[in-house]
Amino acid sequence: MTREIVYTPLEKPHFEEVIALGNAVQGDNYLSQASLAEIYQKSWHDGTNASFVALYNNKVAGFRLTYAHSQWQQDEWCTPKAWPVPADRVCYFKCNTVDPSMQGAGIGSQLLNRSVEQAKVQGAQAGLAHIWLASPGNSAFKYFSKNGGQLIKKHPDKWRHASMYEGYDCPVCDGYCSCDGAEMLLVFS
Image (cartoon, rainbow, N blue to C red; front, side):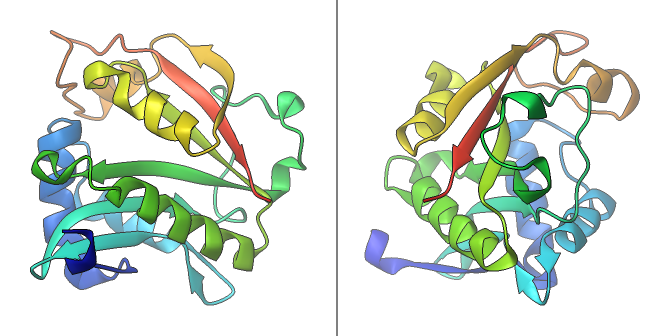
C-alpha cells in the first residue's frame, strides 16, 4: 500500500478533504475553511511550505499541518526554557491525522519526515507538538515518541478553551474537553 501513497505539499485544492478527515478523526469543528486557510499561511517561510498531505487513489488519506518557525507564537502551553534549541528556531507541528483505515502503514511517520525536511530548509532546528494524550491507545504519544519526540511537560485541560469558546467538540469528552496535552519537542539532526 505504501508504494501507492503520494506525498505532496498541502495546497488549497486539498482543503475540503483535509477538513473532513480532520473533523472525523479529531472531533467536530477541529478544522474549518477559515482555520485551515490560516494554518496554510503559517506553513510558509521563504517560499517553502512545511505542511503535507498523503494521497491514496487521489484522495487525502492523511495530513501533517506544520507552522514555520517564523509563523507562530508560544503561549502558556509552551516551556521554551526547557527546550535545548533557541525558541525562535522551533517550528510547530499543529496536527497529524491519518484515515483510521490507513493507519499502521507508516503514513504518519512519512508525513512527519517530509515536514521536518521542509522545516529545516526554512531554518528550524526543532519542532514542537502538543500531543493529545487521550488518543485511542495513546497512539499519538507513541507515534511521536517513536519518531524522536521528547516529553517536555504535560498540560492538563489543553483543549478546554477551544471546546468552551471555539466550538471544538472533543470525540472522547462529554461536555467541555478535559484532555491532557503533552508538550513534546523533536530536535532535528
